[in-house]
Length: 344
Ligand code: CP3
Image 1 (cartoon, rainbow, N blue to C red):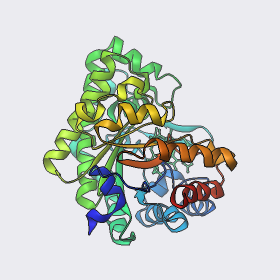
Image 2 (image 1 turned 90 degrees about the horizontal axis):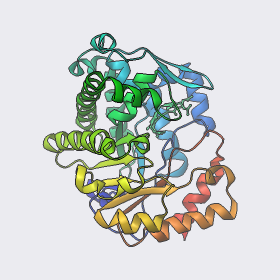
Image 3 (image 1 turned 45 degrees about the vertical axis):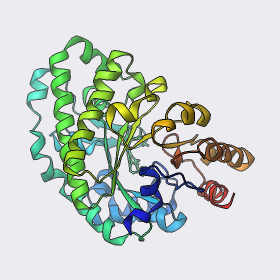
């Protein structure tokens, strides 16, 4: 039954001889079949909001590689859009959004309860997938963490140091906190609806958690994760949750216990040995091969893949990259990584 799925076993705390595998951004531009479906959709956002095509691109890496998990094809920036922000993608550059830096900007956002109108096609993709996936494959839903989503909503784009969001936090705390609250409420409703539609696990991506230091990390990475996880556990006690406070460093220590996450995903700025001793001792860990190996391949890939498997072999582990696979990756290197893990 469902609990026989290798990802769910790892999330329940089981140590397995061969770790289950999936990859962040496994459906993406490094795959020719993804590029073809994206061209058919016209652009990235049209692909996200087309349940048939989003289902197709989610399934592509499962067909090609037999990963143990499929991750819903969508984006963390659909939540700001559902709250009323303008969102568009500039080819070769990345996302652009209308900005929230004043009380008047904040007042233009809609209530969290209204997000479903925009996000209904995403729930349809989840329903399609839960009927279409092989029985051994786990379906993972996701959302961005409030801080990471706020960094894009405040700056209107990706930023190297999240400067505009830090400035709002330090200079207009009431608006910053109101924005964090609104995103948190929307995220709980969004993830809960994904679980109702058939997501078996959900992951919260805090890609920019590493720029929060000291008390800021506790207030704006730990506390919102705890609030989201508590609310979801109350409504869906059986659904495991993966938290990814990327580049948290020492902040990874105790993150399971502080937030209630079933699994903490770690990036490749920490070694498997360090993460096993300091994080895996508290529960399942996901990670953490550097994604550049999917570009460079060869002996280095094989050696580093074995190091990750070896480093985490004494506890519950889900094999993944330290961050998303990049568009310049070679699909054959992904196969080499999988063969190395499954074949020894
Ligand atoms: O992992 C998956 O395969 C599931 C789908 C997924 C996407 N984005 C698809 C996507 C997931 C889980 C995300 C999460 C996401 N989106 C994050 C958090 C994880 C991380 O990578 O740190 C962030 C910060 C975003 C915001 C975002 N979306 C940016 C900054 C960009 C542009 C950068 C880029 O690679 O072009 C996107 C676009 C995006 N999201 C693409 C994909 C496949 C590329 C779009 C395309 O096809 O052109």
